[in-house]
Length: 371
Ligand code: 1CP
Image 1 (spheres, rainbow, N blue to C red):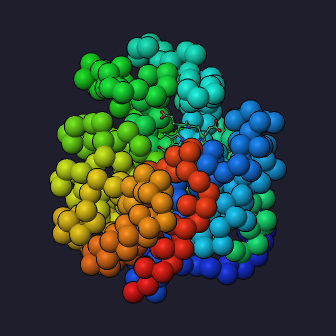
Image 2 (cartoon, helix red, strand yellow):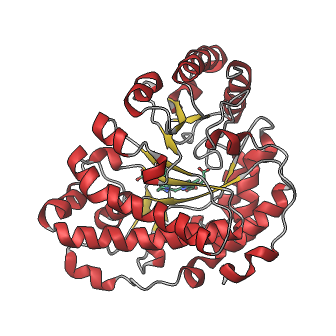
């Protein structure tokens, strides 16, 4: 539907393009900064809304998703990007699975995929417009309400991370059920990963046509795989997503968008090299977790890819002095590493962080990331 109507959408002019410039490879005068999970339980205004509305209701109601997305933008004047409020688990829902968000426990699937016979439950011809159109409506609304203050980032979960939830039925410590599939049922695993990837690609294209200006793919559990399994199972699925997105946008003469890959825990040099040539992978930026040194990663991957990250989310508990010292230290590393850099945490803001400390982190980035 959006393939025909996107040209008619008109949005306010962008005032702060620092994020898009860094994603384009520019060494910007200061680093753009946003925080994964910047909208969420750390903010009292989010918790107040959540008391009144169920989690997925917030995702499915464009007015609520829009309000929550804008909460950190209203609160923190130093933030350089907004990210759609939604969840990666809307793709399993679109494929036909039920997902509940349990208080304190997080996501839960009442009927996870126990073995490959359950693949027949999934709707592999899913129409993303019909199932996730509410996300596209939210995005268009957010772009208008943002009024050009900062760019809007769209996102989806990565195939392996989503497969892991669909099989485990929720979070897991060992991922033994999901990983067993890779060892026992390689062909069916591949089929599932590609089915998810194809839906993710359609979802991201729809997000861009609705107004998302950048994209991020969240592969939170990539580090649970051996380098061999990351390369042979997950990488082809990740490449299917980026290639389909760039291809579909080109096919309808829509300007291309930059995609960031957050492959958390992927540290093996060979794997890092395989995801670091944007001309091959279609991912312009790697979002690094805090367990790697950006200077060392730069030596491994070369100069083509940009970096995002990689502050330990726990520094937000370190107090003003602790935060400032750590921001100063890590800024020096990224300056030394060179290339486009988007300052961020190495994973999401945790729920007990004080909003003022998030604000102070942003101030420190503004101060110490100046080149
Ligand atoms: O009860 C609540 O209010 C739920 C808290 C919450 C929030 C605020 C969840 C449940 N999801 C979200 C929003 C969300 N999730 C965003 C919004 C934008 C942002 O501010 O960053 C995004 C990008 C996500 C992505 C997401 N959901 C990921 C990938 C990134 C990551 O943090 O690792 C994952 C793994 C999820 C699953 C999920 N959703 C929610 C929880 C508690 C979890 C993790 C559960 C687990 O540890 O397995």
